[in-house]
Image 1 (cartoon, helix red, strand yellow):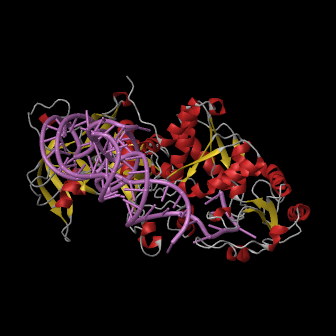
Image 2: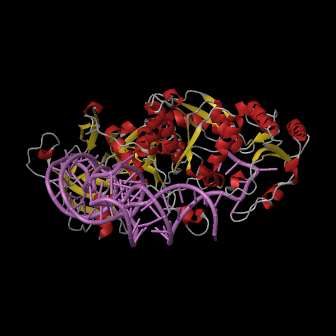
Image 3: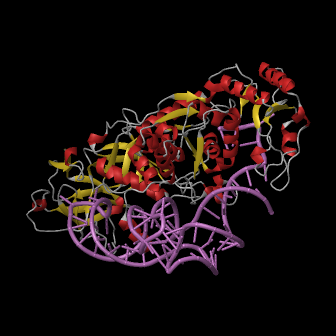
Length: 559
RNA sequence: AGUCCGAUGGUGUAACGGUAGCACCACAGUUUUUGGUACUGUUUGUCUUGGUUCGAAUCCAGGUCGGACUACCA
């Protein structure tokens, strides 16, 4: 039968809610980004979760921008967020049911606030930011009530209207909920509902000069949209009583909040503040730099959307702190690319191989399958000649025992061509190998080998006269340590100085010269690469998505 | 110190009172015209102390450790 997959704790809650007939069995989630930065791999988990749950239980998922702070929010971010979600969800059949904005509800939210004032549950406070902080109390001491707390309903109504009308400067007044200044949960000590900001909003322009706080916007927005399951990360768990308090006092649709632990990844940082710093201080080229853990960065790096989704599914969700090994993400990427990326040959660090017994001027064409994992990927033709570029590391003057490549007297197969035997090499004055010399064995021709010879190694190559060139950008992890945020000092002290290495001119098969941005291939024996958007008609640029597993490199490391 | 959350191999995640499983990593081997892929096998775990029970990772109590909260951010 079907493989019995266990449910995560949210699925359990949902299935129980459905079983109990809650909301008539209706499931409605939402993904609520704040448009003040680009989406990252942590958001990908949330997207997969919210949209995935909606799909699995025949529900809906809204996209709602939480745009209640005009100072940090921009339209550029709205656009990038929409593009990233669409890309990530491609092929899943999931899409947002509605594109919504918390700012759509400003008028409604204002009315909600008025309602609470009328019920004596909110008041306008004259306290400054500093005074509010000073009277907040602490984890061990209760706070002090503001003198403004005893204002009459009429006065509060008038003052709040005046706030909206722009009679006050930023910070001069604030609207607070009247709850309990001695509450053990600090968030319930008369939390702020509205603050004054004479700032231009990316959607409402200059219509408003008062803006609702997160706590007075999020739950009400959920309620307005009749969201049944409002899923957020663990740090909002203390907000839940407040979320429930507003809904209860307003007597509106009872959305419920559930929390899961945000996902962390090794060798990177995830907070938008830190990512913004990396961008602003030019440690990376932008939000979509291939080293960034952003969705757009990973896309540019060559990570397939399917692989990212697979990763989110693999690591699962739970309520405990975690830091997932970036190796798992890379595994998912390789797993997908292994099945889908065509194999091609490129020589990153070239040295010339001369086949001394191959006639000068002679050429041959060999056929090569594009993907051994996918017969439908077809095949292509490869030009072969007397002089080839091979990888410098595939030759050693004095090879160690189990070196299955070229060295004096050693034999290897040239992929899809002949077996060759190394007969010598030339060096320059500095002692660098300039040419490797070999002889080919005509009877070992690929596909019609009659020699009975077997060799341990097969190496890739590109014909010298046919080769084209490309720029290749080798990426490595952005940070030197697993968890930069938990180290002493500034996280930027742990940036990996070798996270990008540019090879200006590598040799590629001629057929690759007109590869299009976004195209993904495997450079045989080297890794998966993706054509970068910076490519031009005369210069194609490849980003290294991820290396292949390299058992030999590991072996050498041990020695 | 107050409130709240959490604790299962190196990492992530299952087991819902009845055989601690899966994935990644690591290690060993088989296959291989990619030292890739695929396949096989191995090592490694229930924070602690009590209690309930025929039986506890699971329920209860205490402890320990980790995290969150004291922004006019979300």
